Image (cartoon, rainbow, N blue to C red):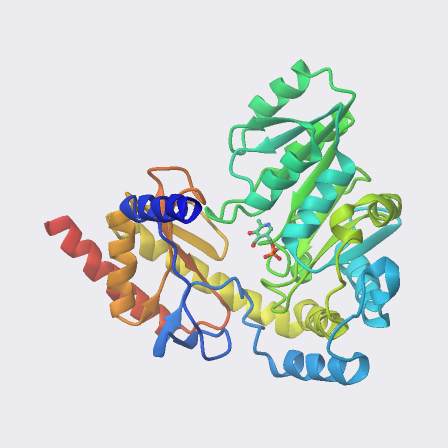
Length: 396
Ligand SMILES: Cc1ncc(COP(=O)(O)O)c(C=O)c1O
């Protein structure tokens, strides 16, 4: 019983600090209007930035992929699980997202978490110093830990501080790693100066473009394309379960980097390949992202982003200066943030409360996540509720 008791104690401790997390059960596709725990709600919680998860062409593609390849891959990529659908998708991804390097190649992973573990453990090790932004995603933090490199955290987006740390380092090998769009703040990393530092110090620059791919840059090619960067030292990780609306992730880089990952990255080698049907659906998604429909969805999303920025500035809480689909509103205390989320929930609006350890203590926030699936009427509902709550807070 003692082992269970200590877990009970841990759970009670989380509850006392307002840190218990709760899963909600959804009975509809991920869309602007969803059935959540049996109730009709407008969702502002997903990363489905282009509103593609329920797109008929993707639903048809996954069914067609299952007909063609079956339900599962049957093995790891190196031992029989690598299908034509995976190979085709990697070619599509290299052509679409690898324009920052001559001889691009891409490698498809089941999740972004695993892609980040793979890149960092394969490119960094003992003798490497890995410089990591203070607000990087948990998967990059875990990858850095697993790599056994010496890890130095630089203050968020602070190029000068990073430059001083690189100057002071005598490591044989260096790697800089950053989110492109920070997942809980929505701001964009200073990629051009980071690449200039990487080039000056002979370091890799690994960019986790989870929240930029599909949304930023020409045709949604991502943050590196938006910043018009080119370098063989760049390694890009994009996820395919967010704007692409399906699941999985990819690493795009020089062909030699990718071959190194195939040979050495344990999170790539020692796991079953995802279902080929999923890869088949991602290829269909890339066509939508790159085409006129993708442009129209991005244009609508950007109109919603600008409207939300203006709305959040009218409240008594602290918006973050974000020009992306992630629009946080910092409330501060855990309980107050939970209360706000509960009040919005009562109005049929699902806006998640984000608390430590996902964000630093004292900066708990509502994370409003916008999607091209939202209409201006949906935003009207959010606007009315937030302004009402803000007025009540100011009067209290
Ligand atoms: C910045 C960032 N990187 C990586 C991931 C992991 O991607 P995935 O959900 O595909 O594992 C996420 C989200 O979950 C993320 O926000």
